[in-house]
Image (cartoon, rainbow, N blue to C red; front, side, top):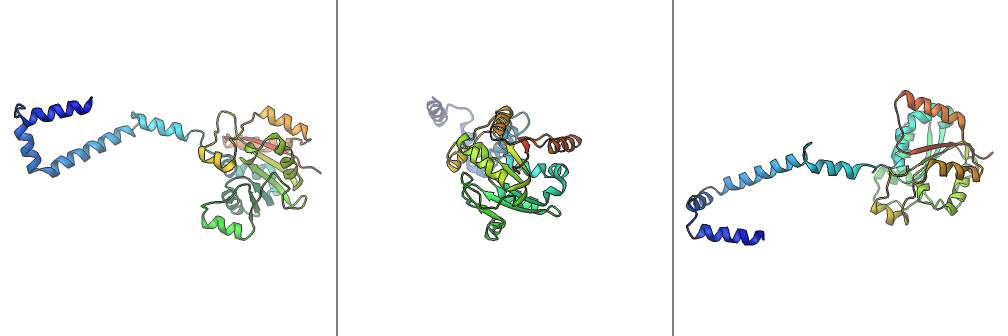
Length: 260
């Protein structure tokens, strides 16, 4: 429909019946730069409106970003509160989960804290700093559905994020027992919240299955089934520290006692 209208208008102008046709042709011949400048200015104004508070493009961008965070990022935000909850137990930490290089790098910047990491999935297109951590053996790539390459109680704390959301209950049973085995003081789990986090398309191919966001009641029942008990002291201290700073975790956080 639009093509026929444009064509009709062009014929109308060319026939000389349009009163300003001569002026338009003269203007286009004499000032092509002016025409281009007007087009550019119009495009800039349109883009500015689209991304302003009243433009709908801005709202669409926000909706795409919403819920796009990961629990591994949440671990980094929670480090100050974990330190207050666990004190000296933060001296030797193992992080297990995607993007573990970033978490380990953050932990290593903390005073008197040693950190290691396990990346459950292949590491691709990573920064040089991550390659360095892998080269030094600080970060390992290992399938967490199988026994971890560490002796019992190798770490004071074990923190796991995101990875458990991609495991079925069949593998969760073995994996959680392994995580508890290598911890001496505590096991901390950051899990996705139902309705908040969603698996990206890229994650589906990377992890092999969509994330399963489980409720806190589901996790509590599962922990009870495999005899993992809540660390009530750590829960209380973590919540007190978070409350003082008005920190509200974007993921579910579970504090568990290791097996002794």
